[in-house]
Image 1: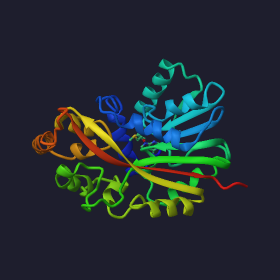
Image 2: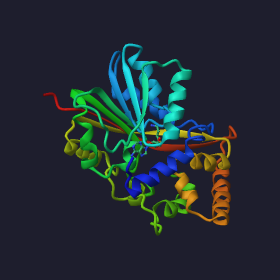
Image 3: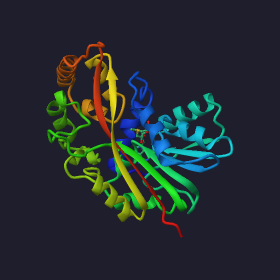
Image 4: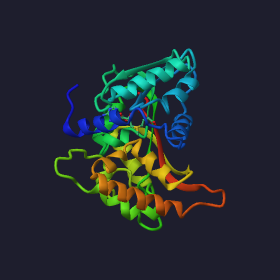
Amino acid sequence: MGHSESTAEMYRVFNTAAGIYDQSGVEFFGPIGRKLVEYSGIGPGESVLDIGCGRGAALFPAADVVGAHGEVIGIDIAEEMVAHAEAGAKDRGLRQVTVRLMNGQAPAFPAARFDAVIGSFSVFIWTHGAPELRPYVPLLRPGGRFAASAPSFFPTATGKWGFLPEAVHDLLLPHLTKPKEGDAYDCPFANIHNNWLVTEEVVGATLTEAGFADVEVREEALPIVVESGAQWVEWTRSHGMRRLWDRLGEQESRELAEEVSGRLDALRGTDGRITLPTPIVYMRARAPRA
Ligand SMILES: C[S@@+](CC[C@H](N)C(=O)[O-])C[C@H]1O[C@@H](n2cnc3c(N)ncnc32)[C@H](O)[C@@H]1O
């Protein structure tokens, strides 16, 4: 697979994280994947493409919905993710699932191949606007469904990025956004106040510009519940945010992790746990009816 430098960096991050991805005991990608499948409106017997399927957070719920007479194809750029998703499908006896190593930026399928195309916490990673969403429209039969989830960048009351817990926002944001020499990764994180996920209106207009119809967008908070600040930090190392830690030296990383853990520990509730409401955006649309 020939990758641009940016795509190669995404590949590195996720291929490295695949073994621990979504395995930290923090409920996050699972509930989002299940909600996305429900929101997407896919039904029994349908043919579904899951772009950036990872270990299967949306893939398996989609397979349950389409049933034995349907079909779900998951694609991912990271072979370690593909291997885990294949193993998960086998363990669950989901014979309607196929997983393929493929770059989601250039999905190689015939026109009108799918009833639905979904992407949970994936498509936003390499999408800066309508041009990168446009290739998904012709994959759908006329009237077919597109649905995706992403971290929300919608404005919050404090003007901070709601995805990061307020107590550690200012500590972490600079490390996520700061360009680093030789770092080619240019996901929307690098431009937190100017990307296509900034408001409901911009998300809707971007999907419409890409060629979708019947666009709907909604933001919903998912409470992330952790036993300790250290568990939240471990969780951030198990997915795309691991880049933040990878870019720091050993000492800086240790000191930052301690500071973040301590601040989050101070938020412990009466149940002894830390609950962090985290805004998620869900979007759905249809391919134009012919
Ligand atoms: C945050 S994970 C989400 C995985 C899964 N959908 C879930 O909800 O758990 C992002 C996934 O997108 C994949 N990915 C990143 N860039 C990709 C690309 N260009 N093409 C296909 N998959 C990609 C990563 O390997 C990773 O599995």
